[in-house]
Image 1 (cartoon, rainbow, N blue to C red):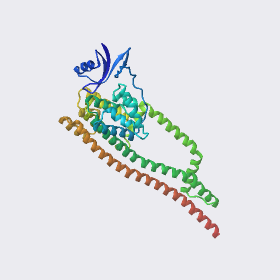
Image 2 (cartoon, rainbow, N blue to C red):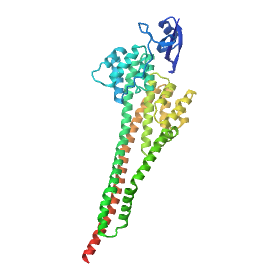
Image 3 (spheres, rainbow, N blue to C red):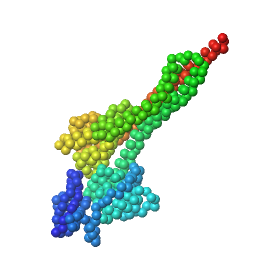
Image 4 (cartoon, rainbow, N blue to C red):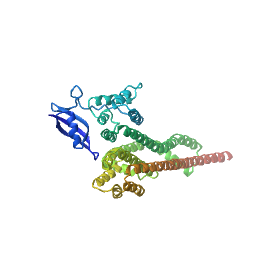
Length: 417
């Protein structure tokens, strides 16, 4: 009797691993099927180590991480292309072979070749993806594993590609909304610094030569300019130290939690970040549920895929309550931070048994909410920055013009005498 090591996905969507004795690989698969276990990896132990027999019966080493990184566009390309090949009727090995023989030198080609090699060595597709590139996160690999077990890998990859495209568009819209106001503010600060440290001293030296008494606004401006030139470097060093301290604090678990929670309270930008999270939550959960994963497993995967530590903690509490038998909407109400409108819509999906499609519809609503928030940010923030910079330039200009007029008036009095 041989000993086989297996890894499988249970009917509840949870990973299982174990050993089974059988006379052959076929017998091991039959016995696991009787126990309602559908393995996606079955390796025969040889000399105390797990090995996968190919036709020659040779042992195969476990996967070695390839470390090939894919950007967002390349990840979508890999998923879409593989999905199209599988829908066209090609087997997985054939599809990966075609992708590995691309004419370009894209990392997609290297990933496909690496994954194909590992699969031919007896490794499951989902594990080969995880070994090939860190860009295939735990969420992605678990969904592929579910597709392998259910036999619906091609439609799952197509839905996953659509989901990745939607998430990329969402991140792009949010980043665009934050980029323009930030660039405008930085440009305004640089302009003010140049004015105070370069232009004001030049004009001040001209006023001093006239010997006239500068008015109060001009003296205040000259004092600020002198302070900037004298203490600019020490103040800059202090600010740099404070920023460094803040970064180190944010890297600590407690600091990261407070930082992520504080960002959600910012005017305008906080609501945009909240809408972005709820859109991602609804779309990702819909994708997981539509691919056959149970609710609890989907919540746990969503927790690990969430970047905001504050929301991650809320999702952990949410998953714990659902695991104890609480309904999703009631658990959301207990946890808090989930809007009542979201809970009301989800309650309909729970009652009708259409939670996945309901989450997808809610995700579309939040996409529209994101666009509204982006429009507000793009309208309000640049306008506020422009008004602030305009007022600053007006005050500086008024202060300098007051000094110039005073100097001219003094020169006229001297000439008349």
